[in-house]
Every structure is written in structure tokens, then in C-alpha cells.
Length: 155
Image 1 (tube, one colour):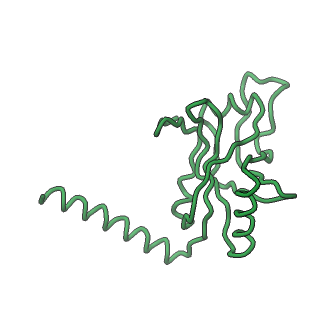
Image 2 (cartoon, rainbow, N blue to C red):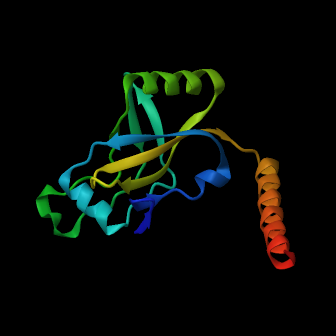
């Protein structure tokens, strides 16, 4: 688990920034059971293929994998169950409108523990990238990196 800006990151979706163009981000709470929290603290969660979906006016995290907690015995959780995300009603309405109208998706970028040790999910409103857009972004990132090296060495 990494610590960044006072946040302890439990799971990260690194592929999302490559596959999607991030329009905006927001923080959401997540409803977890006790064994899920303990499993998250071990840092073995995977949100690589997960996404958020609206159903009956509520936001759900689908296809995220939190492995079973080894000491959980009969109280253990189902690893791939749907988990409810907690956002304000206005934020949820704004997200669902942009998903329906503009063809965007809601993708989790990371699951982390904040300063108060509460599990949070960083969600992104994103637009899918085509293959040529991905190549373009890679070229731009490589050039920026090379430009930084040149400026550092010469300056």
C-alpha cells in the first residue's frame, strides 16, 4: 500500500488513465462489511475491470474484486459482489445525466483510506479513447518526459 497526500491507497486502476480521457473526478464513500475492510487493508484488491453503474437512482460499483479475508471463516464476504457507492444526490444526478446524454462512463481510479481511516473511492467521469488517441497520448507523454530531461541537462 502506498501513502500519497495523507491517503493510504489500497487499490489503483492504472489502466483507466490510459484507456479513458478523464473529464472530472470526485470522491465517494463505499459501503463495506468488516471482512472487506480487513481485506482492503491487506492491499490485494483489484479494480482493473470495474465500473460504476446507476440503478434505481443509486450508484453501484460493479465487478471489483476484494479477495476473501483469510481469518474471516463463516463471516466472509463474496469477492465480486456489487458494492453501493455513497455520493450526494445532486452529484449522482449530474453524473447520471452526463452518462446518459454524452455517452461517458464512470470509472473508479482508486480505493483508498483517508486521514480518518474511512474507505473512499476516487471516481472519474471519463470518455473512452480510440486506439489512435492512445498512441497520440503516449507520444505526447514521451515527448514531455524527453523535453524535461533536455531542459534539466542543458539548464
